[in-house]
Image (cartoon, rainbow, N blue to C red):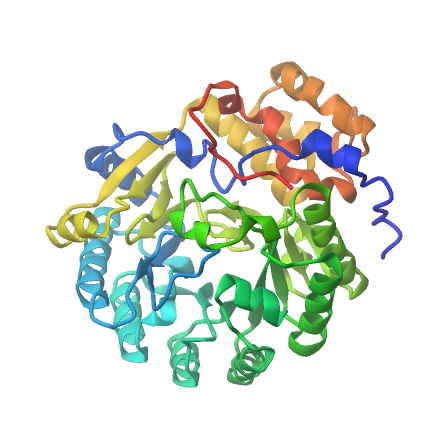
Length: 464
């Protein structure tokens, strides 16, 4: 471990104080607070406002929901179809939505970030990938330095896919891996040998992808700290990813009924589960990776790690990014946009989405217009997440308020965290300590005014 990464203060008692449900803050206000009164008309009005900033770049997320089979641990919005065919009408609907957005945003069109997520984007054939990419870039051309990324499943992604995607201009890949232990893979019904993933990583690097990332999941059935440490060591040694996301598995069978197939008695929880993540963090940091925060690690030469040192990290629905854009549009079923002070979430039901989009409508199902107070708290939360600090001078200069006076309750709630060594607070501001990065969601939660509102049943996954 590095000298500033002392985990001796991470104890079962500390975990018990902070292990509670809480948001991941890819947005603020968070999605549970979106409402159906934000409709297509409201979205179009905000697109008109965004269009007025014609010189500024855009960010775009495209949701491709199809999968050949459903992973038992999956928490995403997916459509399972072992046989190809349903993606064709979906592509037509997506193309129609892209055209409608292009008209609504004209003359603003330049993209500095494009991300395809799923589902499994490479469920599409290489030819279909070309078709979709052309539909996007013929209307929204890419900036010269654009970040162009997608998520792939090595089990269904061919080398022809990789060659096509690189030729089109994709420069970042994220590969789901979860765990290399064969027993864990069997338990979650996702068999993915190391050799298969390594072949895709090596081909991606040969083709010139600038960043190849791996996604792991801890908290799955049959996982142990020693076994997951072994997976992490092999990932570092055999794959050497530029970035790693080490997600906590959220077991929410009341929301995702397919998760009932997993044997919850074989899952870790509490301190035992937390130790799995702490062990992984130790391995990554010992190998030279930077602990960015939440569950993300990056090689020191990776742009994300460099941006962390230069206060250039940003966060949106696609996670951490170094390519900021004042507005993000979401394309496809369940996609969410962030446009001119409002969030707009598309229809979640595939058939309803397709009917609306092909009819020329923007298929918004719900959203929220952010208030001035929302914008203030959103900026503070994102500042903490992206820079691991909150300078009082920055708040006064950029947001026009005295942070100690405006957020009196938040600072009171942070005092126990300071005593526990998660944050340091002085006259200059707040800074997150190395062990505080494990509890970053908790540190942000005192600034979230919506958490004081009552909710019906579980809303968020646990914070650690």
